[in-house]
Length: 602
Image (cartoon, rainbow, N blue to C red; front, side, top):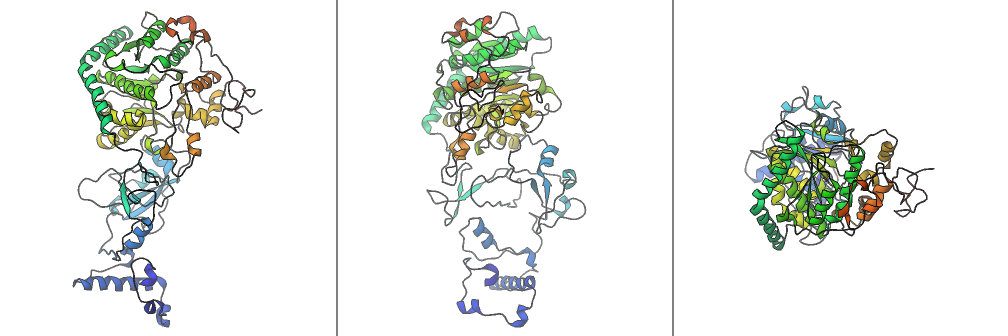
């Protein structure tokens, strides 16, 4: 018994007994037979102690739960062994299937990682009827590989999918607990922590929030009451004026669609954009770029947040129906800061614009239209809207650009909220209503991207929302590159420059690193995910990458005088940094990142 369990597991035996040598006949028994006898004696002793007759036992069914939990982080001192009269229904067989093939076979909508933790997915069979063929793969042996996913799942009537990864230097165990009735589709996370402080393997496992790191810090606490009340005030204003705003927006959209098509206006797609004065240069550049390529912007409705940006947009558009629409919601947006060149990710202006983005998309959804939302730091190469009505994407409710981030707060979809498409139905409608109700979380986290990613996972599980991230590893995802490729995937950029890939657009997204990913001071993760630092650098990157079409005389503080002559027919290229992608050789320019290699190899 002591030899099987080892020391330190609650098995207290005298030193005399522990050191007694086996007799010669016992030592000659095969090891498995000796272990089986020891387990049988222990099980018999346990049941006799309760004056009951032990059931027939099988040494393969006996599990040293104490040893298992000790390795996984339990501090329990129990020495009881579990025995069963028949194989447990929680696991009858196990097999491996190729991860890539599994994700191609099913429309999970989740993008692949650059560095997957394993090439195979683990498939567990909970009954013999679920196993492929006429024999279950032995769950106690190394799970065999079944290369054909269809064959592996041929007898599975139900498939539960869990995305699992351990980004921290901790030992990870997964527990599957049989439960009568409907199972839970949430994961309960436990860490070996004290009441306060970092990971301590001498402590008991303790239930923690899903975003608690091994230092014991939860980066996703609930909002404080002060922030909740502030959100309530915003909700009151929204609800008080909702009908008036919807009447205004409906009138604008209906008038435009009446000129564009004879088809019923319902579900006709609308493209939403938001802008304040500080971002007006980027909006002007987007419209100039679209004009140079004769791309249709008539379905775009720009939600402005101040009179200055409203005047700028009005001066950029013509009187016909080929120009974008514009609307200023004075009830909800008038208090939004003007912004400027010094605006940074997560500051007061940035956070206030999140509320604008939530409401602008919700208004269009409430009117029953499909929605494509995009930020102003985008340049179209082609109209992306028709792609969302093709066979490959028409089955999805919500389609997002791939953010590229590996942060846990965005998992598993890693959806970028600077460019996405929502199909008008009750599922996407309620997704946006839920986002509205979670405005206090948005204020706390300073961005709605984290909140949307969490809602996507919840609504996909609870309501069957069909979500798709345009995986940058897939052909269709390569049509929507952004800041991640610009910063980290220069091979993808070169394929664009040499014509191998013809993207629909380019999104020069910027994102602030999140401390959650710096588990034990791994600062290198921060620099690798800081796509575009600020407004000034964003414009510089766009200029040297051939994304800038706004002439210099139209870029001053007084942009309300913008006219059509502010737009260049060709991109205005200027070099700034030799280590960042550029459409021309910029090796004569300084480095942006210290010790980085030039983009152009001579």
